[in-house]
Length: 369
Ligand code: SF4
Ligand code: SF4
Image (cartoon, rainbow, N blue to C red; front, side, top):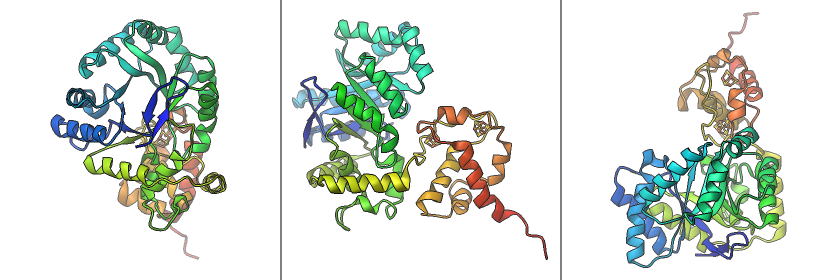
């Protein structure tokens, strides 16, 4: 395992971290805890969880694993989160996480999922950020961090305010231009960077051919290539992979072991190809599921990815994969709520029109001449 500096904190973390949101069978706490211990035995030291991951079981799984890891004297650091805006509510979340995880302190405590600059302002105003700082003084928190779906420019604004020693953000070959400025700001400020969603929510492995330019050889597995793309970025402290089972852990460990530096020209070439072809694809995170009309925008947005990836006919995708009709989009009142909620700030309504033009037109009956 490779270890990297977490900003200028003097702390080294494993280049791949354990994302605790995708356990295969989270009801089986013992089996999941074994996966965590296995990762620690393989050298992973950064473990990321949250109160609601896996129906609330994720923190309990880590607590079980940590007990065993202490017995085996394996080093570990834990990251968890709270999305509360009020100080007393955040404090309650923190205390509940400490209890569930059975630890005396949280190594990385994130103001969870800062979505907009208004949201950020509210967390300061209503005391959540103050409560994090207070808990840090009390040594209940080692490092104050924030996790976010803001654009790169807005991440820079938050980073520049100087509250945090780390940022946790979604970053991959799918959306890197959108978050680039945030990574740059974190590096300049010398704060840690934990990257979530390295496979773009499955977009990369599901569209292997379209992303094949990430590979250094035809034999290289696409998942390795996507992880290598991130390992090549020295500004990233740790890449959080959402492990389901032991096999997933072994695959990520193998990906780190097979990593070779790509050279500046090759990296530049890869980045240019991504910007040209795939800037701002939907990562199917489902945060846009806020529609007052009952539309599930993410299903249509995933199908709209096909317009750019040219991997599958979007009409087929809507019909056979998602079982939704393009006619559903006629219910859209263009309120914009889904766009405000979108983690990639995608022009959802514009994409609907593009989809309708391609899929809807095909369905319309042609007048006999
Ligand atoms: S813009 Fe349309 S799809 Fe989006 S939330 Fe509003 S009604 Fe729903
Ligand atoms: S449209 Fe945006 S919020 Fe919705 S699933 Fe795609 S990336 Fe996520």
